[in-house]
Length: 441
Ligand code: ATP
Ligand code: MG
Image (cartoon, rainbow, N blue to C red; front, side, top):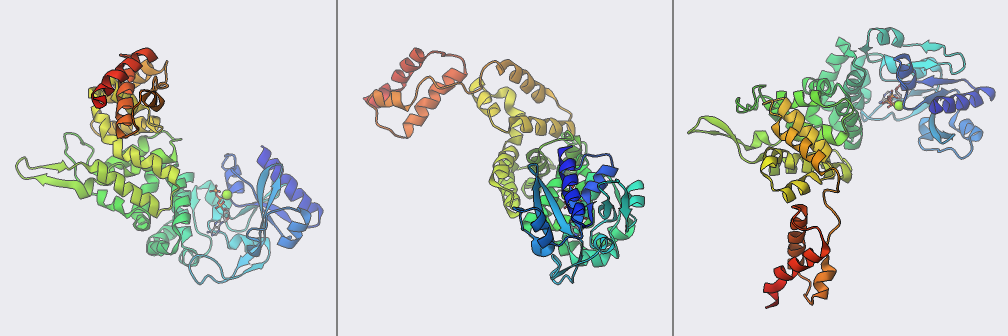
């Protein structure tokens, strides 16, 4: 455990200098739950200035809140001075902080299970907030009066649901009621901070329950309100015996592998986001029709992800998955070149998984999925898109002027190559001559 030993040596250095130093928060909680903590936070009586003096070259970011980032053996350890937060005026951050004692520091933390300390040398747990009892019963409970604590910092509303989801804990009833009562305060929180908590929730194995808690509490109104339109959005029962789009989406989230990527989880959440705005009842047949929700779905997904400030690489992965998910119904009809290009997408493995759960949660069809598995095995020996046999340079050498046709011609050659009808450069050049013949004359 390199992170733990790095944190222990940081704590020991503080203790040797005469300060108190304890492990705090998430690392203590996760250790007690038998999980390997992602990172270790150290809480100390040393002031930021004293911490900086002991660990020269540390990062001062947040020092005015009492936080110094110490780098030890290549690992970043957050060292925070015991503190009491002053009043919160904006519902986001305290106006001032005052350095204080361990019991007071525990009181400013969000949930009892996050308010535990541990002596790094004896491993003794120090519990000022009833966190041990709540860990035992797997209960998420705000420290202090829930309504007040959520009023101070509205991000805690979302953190409550995120921790309940990730840890698999029940939210204590008074805490839950306060989350519901204060849900609209989440509007005060920046999209970036909402995004970071939301990403942890939607990638958790229990992401279905996470989404349900967001919907049931009302928090979803300030994250992805479009999800609310999925509720009660009926679908043709012959394809969707499971019910409305919300149910379909929830079952899919549940069926994903525990370690599904963020992109896949977001794509599943958003894959049918445009069904509500595109559905109409066909009066003749008296049934629901969806008018090509793929394009609008991609547009809506992009708007949603931009609003939440997801980085471009995430957006560029999720949006095509949403746009392409209906094309999986046609894969068996695609000619080889088209199929290979389709499968060559960087997100193909995630898309295949999306397709699998899309069918498994509704009609139960597996033929397209199995077809693609077969094709994947069949094509595995070579790259899906092999190195080109000819290039623009060949066209220039033939005395042709660059233009939009270059792309068309080269694509036509690539198609022949993907179809397996040509394999050698000589064949490709002959074909190129034939193709370009017309435009020469
Ligand atoms: P994770 O496993 O997600 O890192 P964590 O408990 O370590 O979980 P962090 O966001 O890293 O969560 O915060 C570290 C600790 O700081 C928390 O355990 C909690 O004690 C305290 N904390 C963090 N954010 C808040 C907040 N908004 N209000 C009160 N206390 C907070
Ligand atoms: Mg943490």
